[in-house]
Length: 457
Picture (tube, one colour):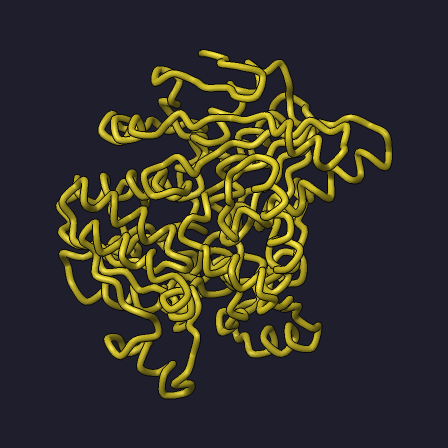
């Protein structure tokens, strides 16, 4: 391990984790089982085999604390991992706070975000099983570009259903996927039954991750040579991302510090889980008391305003029923620029941890997020992706509290990606065209009232 200076901590290749951390081994209360949507009984792993490879299904239900990272995956990780940890001293100075602020920067990956950590693993396991083609969805395009990159490395074809509003807002994300050989379709589309049904009801539908998932799953189920790949929500996806937090623990040791607060943006859970789960292990196994805060958009507040119940992971109801905090699988979020966070539900693991009071959640409006992102860029020189600005907004809140209380505290957040492909979002912010979209209690109640899925006592 090498500490280059007072602002940056780098690790060497030998420090890339050799295992992923599986928090299911340490949770005081296990997740409720996923249910078969037809029988409403716990779904068997065999039922998942038409859309996922066997080894990923085994990881999904595993209770082993650590699972080995294949050498082939770790070799690809070496292209950008370990990622740097920075002390944000200029940001601290700008905020006039006694807090010590650190950030783990995942924007150094080939695709500019944390998403390749699981994309590479999923492409590898599918290739190993003899799969020829993958389908997937993407919101803002970080996941789609990550899987496109991974599929190009392992010789897999890829079909990406991109939420229509993001397809139109972020054309360069689409081109990035095209460069790596992926076919990108705006969702909802006329290609699938699910897409045609949505367009028949609303020809101008902006789309949602739930709709795009329905289209991708439907396409995967039509061919034995095709599997489906998801970029968040599922247990194995969240586990793959723990390389972030495992590295961060080592780097904080080098810095001679330990965070009291860990913060990350929250869409379906991969970003938040990636940095927080290894630190939660210190709480669960070593008696530490580290606060872990998931930060979601005020326009899509499933943790802070949703209901914990069984729901589908997609709009058409093709997936198993998952126990999650949800706004309802038919919910279509407003077209905010943080497309990667526009998902109606929270992953099972995060939902159970939140239900048990082991993590916290905050909802932040779009304008506060962009204001935070610009402030951070002025201090540290990195333009954050719109998703990452949610974490920065929460960091600013915590830093202000530290100043008001006159107490130093250590804050760590995940800067999950850069905003180089999101300049149109910043342009809209500077021109005053962005709005805060805050859901009313009536809108949330209406969406949840349409659910016919099992409630949880």
